[in-house]
Each structure stands twice: as C-alpha cells, then as structure tokens.
Image 1: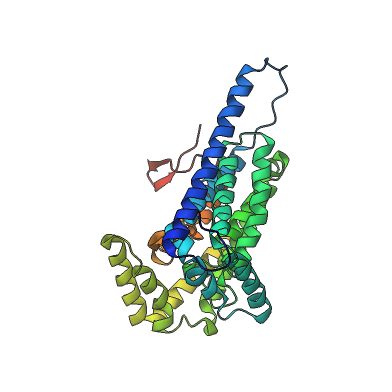
Image 2: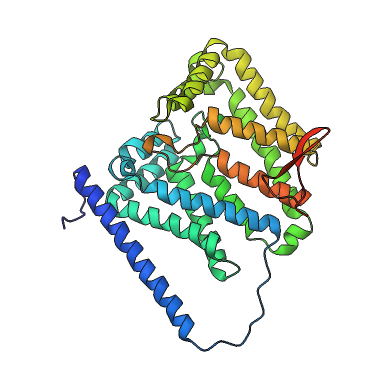
Length: 360
C-alpha cells in the first residue's frame, strides 16, 4: 500500500486509501459490536438496576434530530470530492476576506489537515458517524451524553475551520446559511444536555424563543447591511445562481434560475422584502411567541430559504451538511413539542386551516 505522506497523492490512490481505510474501520467496529453483544448474552443476568430517567419529549426530539444530521454529515464527508478537492475546493476559499487573526487561524488548520488529507477525512467521517449513532442509538446511557459533549466540541472546530464563523464577517446572509449550521448543532446539543427540570420549568422554551429572536434579528441585519452588497442585482442573485449551477436534477435547478433572475431584475424591492420578512419574524417571536401562526410562518420561511437560498446544502458533491435550514427546522420542531405537546409532521384540518395536532 502506498504511504500516506505529505506529498499529494493521485486522486485514484487517495480514493482507494480512503475507502479501504473506512471499510476496515467499519469492519472492526462491526466485529467489536457483535462480539460485545454475544458476550453480554452469555453473561448471567445482572441484578435489576434502576432505570435512568427518560429525556423529556422535546429533548428526545432534539437529540434524535441532531443525531440524524450528524449521521448525514458523516456520510457526506465520505463523498469522493471530499478526499480529492476538500482543501482547495472547500476550505481554502473560506479564508478569503476574513479578518487577519481568523484567517491566520484558519490557514493553520488547513495546513494541519493538508499534512495527511486522507487520514484527516477518515477521522472526520467516522467521528461524525459515531456522534450520529451515539445520539440515535445511545438510549438513556452515558454514551448519548458523551456523544452530545463530543458534538459540542466538534461543532466549535467545524464552525471555525470548516465554516469560517458561518461567513458572518465576510458578507454572509441567512440565504447562504449564516450564521452556520454547526453553530446550531452545538447550541442544540448544549440545550439537550440540560436536566429534565430545565425543560419542565420552561427555561428551555424561553431560551429557544430568545434564540429565535436573536437569529432573525441577525438575519435581517446581515441582509440589510449595505457593505454585504445585497441591494444590487449581482450581489443578491449571485448565490442562488451559483446554487442553480450545481449538479442536480433540472426540476430543482429551474426554479432557482427563475428566482435568481427575479432578484437580479428587482434587487431593491426583493431585498427590502427579505429584510422585512426576517425583521417581522424577529418581532413576532418577541411579542407573540406562543402564537402557532408565528411558528407556522417561521417554518414556511425557513423551508423556502433552505431551498431557494441554500439548495438543501447537500448537492454537487461538495456539501458537508444540509446547511442551516435543517437544524433550524429541528429546533422549531423541538419548540412545537415543548410548547404544544404535539408530534411534528402531524396536522389536522380545522375551520381556520391547517394546524398541528396534539399527540394525545
């Protein structure tokens, strides 16, 4: 097997090393899991121990949502382009325009990754898969809490070196995913780590409400800030046009091309409308946080911008995560479970229209 040294490897060799190493780790993990399962089956039944307290329903929804996202991120990290073009095609462009101190820090991280990009990608892939599996399958064991704490630390690493602080310092916007998906991963994990009383006494709900006010205030500010360039046709339409050019089915790309054309033709009106919508959501969450219509409007705006601004984040072979729309929807679902006690995705028809149904 060729060595994995500092010199760049030909793409085919790099891919071979990456996938054989990943397969080897997966095989070892499977053997260990089967062995532990068989060993536990042969042991005498232990004395019954008190069951650990279950997570409150909203925290359970939050943990499972974060687990699914981390598992998806790990699988996305295993894409071929992540092995062959991750440094030059993804990490290096993030440094452009950053403040000098942050740019220096990011270049140091890139240099460290570039020492052995194959091994670094193997580590990132399996770390994220491991976090996802711990959150989804950990039950009430300590492994789930370990997964949550690891996700907090890894979120901080990715937010700095893999997202450049979500682009907020270089003209980013909510349409492009600012302030960064992994920032919401980490904050969500910290919320899920709180004790049950934190959810029962309403503190978690108040934090979610305050976070949504801050989130949409930031979104409106980034969209309105003149130096970011969104008041011009080229600046406003550049991102959706780039998303539309990503390899994807034509039926997904065509609406993005049309949306970019509208933005380019009437940038002042469209950007003013976007700023008003984001600012309106911030005000609504400040003054009417218990109104289900505010929640529904937020879900709708999030879903639309997740598509028309972020193109779901996973297309083109270079997406490392489904972008910020996905974790925000997870947090909104968590809020719905915490406040109204219904299960996300279930709606009933009433005289006033669609509304979430109660779980009972």
